[in-house]
Length: 193
Ligand SMILES: *[C@@H]1O[C@H](CO)[C@@H](O)[C@H](O)[C@H]1NC(C)=O
Ligand SMILES: *[C@@H]1O[C@H](CO)[C@@H](O)[C@H](O)[C@H]1NC(C)=O
Ligand SMILES: *[C@@H]1O[C@H](CO)[C@@H](O)[C@H](O)[C@H]1NC(C)=O
Ligand SMILES: *[C@@H]1O[C@H](CO)[C@@H](O)[C@H](O)[C@H]1NC(C)=O
Ligand SMILES: *[C@@H]1O[C@H](CO)[C@@H](O)[C@H](O)[C@H]1NC(C)=O
Image (cartoon, rainbow, N blue to C red):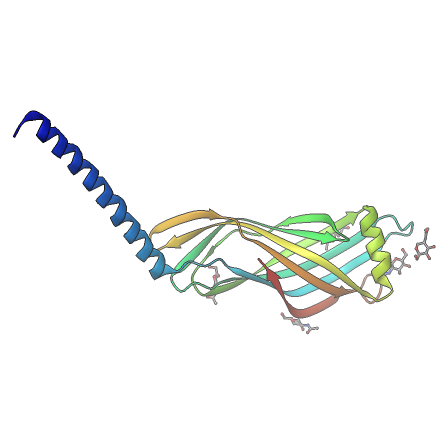
């Protein structure tokens, strides 16, 4: 064998084995994906407790105090979920009026876990007061809870991520029956991702 031949053969071999590695890795990843079929979680709201949802006497500020029970469902058969960040944002009249942190946790496969988001405070937006006046005649209020998450998926011993699914939950509530009262609504509102 001449010098140049052996070098050419060596380069070719190197390229060939590189190509082989890439193709093999592709197949391994593809079958890995097929076996685990990772899917993002689903969310719904199951209960809303409302102890204040009212304008102040000068009609400028909305007082609110409500608790929502958010259920997160891991639909996977073989994939666990690490929630590294979870937040619930409350919107009314097109304005974000508060953000509440939810506890982070590890969710095993086929598991549903309920978390409580607590909102309590006041909002002074023009849209907020307008929406309240429009809706208070009907006695029912439409608002939105958005759950934002950052999660990793556990495929056997490999963790992949991060993924950032957001869940959009449109809910409607009845005003508390009287000042100081609490209204509890048990129902399922599904959230869109
Ligand atoms: C607040 O709004 C209500 C209903 O729209 C109205 O009757 C009342 O006069 C308003 N109060 C003030 C201080 O603007
Ligand atoms: C779901 O997972 C949570 C958190 O790991 C755990 O506390 C709960 O018991 C699980 N629920 C069921 C039904 O297995
Ligand atoms: C909500 O906040 C007010 C003060 O802004 C406080 O007096 C009240 O106890 C709080 N309610 C809840 C349920 O945390
Ligand atoms: C709402 O606020 C108005 C005036 O600010 C008050 O008269 C009324 O009792 C309040 N209603 C509830 C359910 O808190
Ligand atoms: C709502 O569900 C809770 C349990 O999650 C129950 O204690 C309560 O009585 C229910 N309330 C209504 C109005 O159905």
